[in-house]
Image (cartoon, rainbow, N blue to C red):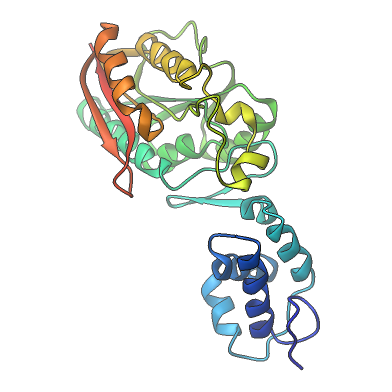
Amino acid sequence: MTTSSPGTAGDLGSALAAAAAELAAAGVPAPRVDAELLAAHLLGCSRGRVRALAFTDAPVPAGYADLVRERARRIPLQHLTGRAAFRHLELAVGPGVFVPRPETETVAQLAIDAARARLAADGTVRVVDLGTGSGAIAAAVAEEVPEAEVTAVELSDLALAWAERNLEPRGVRLVHADLRTALPDEDGRYDVVVSNPPYIPAAAVPNEPEAADHDPKMALYGGGEDGLALPHAAAATAARLLRSGGFFVMEHAEVQAQALARHLENAGSWLDVRGHEDLNGRPRATSAVKE
């Protein structure tokens, strides 16, 4: 028997179609993909396997309708599955922590490239991730540059708990501290500092309900009318922690690229200030070399 209601008795293919329609009506950006990912989560298989099962008489997994209804309420997909993909990793995430975004993968790549270059030159490399959140960037560096000594800094108690789950198995040192004052006894010891600090301006409420309603405000708003208070603080901490010739890279909003470049150029601590685009060609990160 087939049905138009996702998760009731019937075949998986019909349930997926009904779920996609329900999610589309709720404004979910990729309704079919999310419908398949929710089924994959419950079935413990890949999305590709779900698509194959949709052509058979496979039953609908128990609890599917409930998850679809939650997603239609714009609860983040990652909160429902408890997992978020980031580069080659699958990270544990949930309420209380910022869900890593694809654009941050570009920032992680810049940090990874710098760490590999320093490792090749010196045989060792020390990296710190300021405001690590779920630990996405620090985990990626540790995974892709396993010889690196990686430290991650996070202030939020809730985010710290998620970061611990993601970073402890990868040997990353996790420090509970404010990025503005972190690691006071380790000045000049690091080769690479990377940061995705809160940077949204005070009046710029995110368009997506998943971010506006579920990402912690502490992880979104950068402070000040332009949102640059915490990015400026991250840059100051990076200047303190880096050795001469060390590499700093930070994510930011598109509209902040020029202002941040000017700030670094005028700070008196940086050389070779450069902007970097994300996968969509938008100015998403700025890097510099410690003088």
